[in-house]
Length: 245
Image (tube, rainbow, N blue to C red):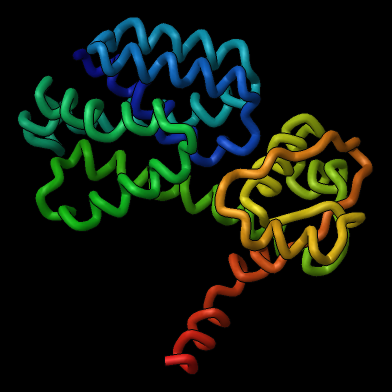
């Protein structure tokens, strides 16, 4: 694997968690196909597919190109001497792709997969080659950005009802992207329709499998469920569990 392909693949993978909730299903399917090509050790083909995806979807283009420049600069610094030769070896790059990027690209939920990989990497932080360590840092930032985005919406819903259009305005994104975010939050049971019954919201709070959101328009208002509240305030749950013990 050459460094050019490696920087493209890593930058693309590291940016996905922060964008996942705004991605259309067909984009996620294309990402899964990139993961399949990488699993077959077709790095050059996967890199070409990534560039094609980025060029055809504006939501991917700017975040990817910005992070890609960062990876290029980092690798160039490594070549000039800040990293050991072993850090930039083909074996090291292929190990990173196999154990870190492929699982994320093929995952049903990019954020969940990235969070798991970051958690595992932190247990072996001292043993990670520099190239892997930098990738994990970028991945961790992307997961944090996604978490912050979710929390911002849920905090806003604590104060008032919000529609898809309101969320689009809040995050400065398109209504279409906001609709995908609402789909995610609904599936996780964090939000429900403001017109739903109290019983319906209770069911949402205890539903384990992802829920399918019914057809709604852009002016439908949503409300925070108890699960969404507990996601924002986990400390309250911990205190309650302490008392029960």
